[in-house]
Image 1: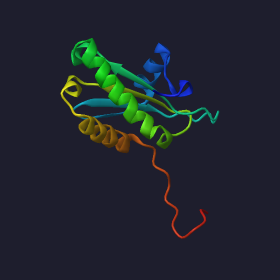
Image 2: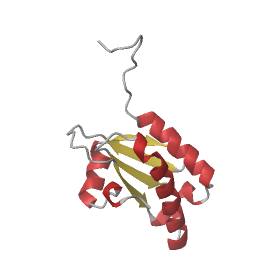
Image 3: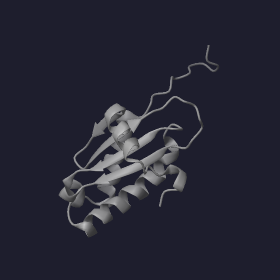
Length: 124
């Protein structure tokens, strides 16, 4: 389970992230990341979209639980105050836990903010 401060619950927050955020997709997932630069120090928040196209209620909840666990492991890698929305594609129903982990990792690597590399010590 995600900590309460890290849960995305507002429909408007989901819509804003999907409209404004960066998007990356794999066979099983589509990941949206909206980086906010307000500097309020809030933790990153995450939400999940698993539609009926994925399968029945039991299968959808299984996929959602797996995704929640995978995102919880990587939540501290996200920038503060950012919003992450993970949408499961129908292929996620047949994917193993390791396949979901690999796909989530790939998607996050593609849209993760790049920090400038410091060469030779102190930045100028």
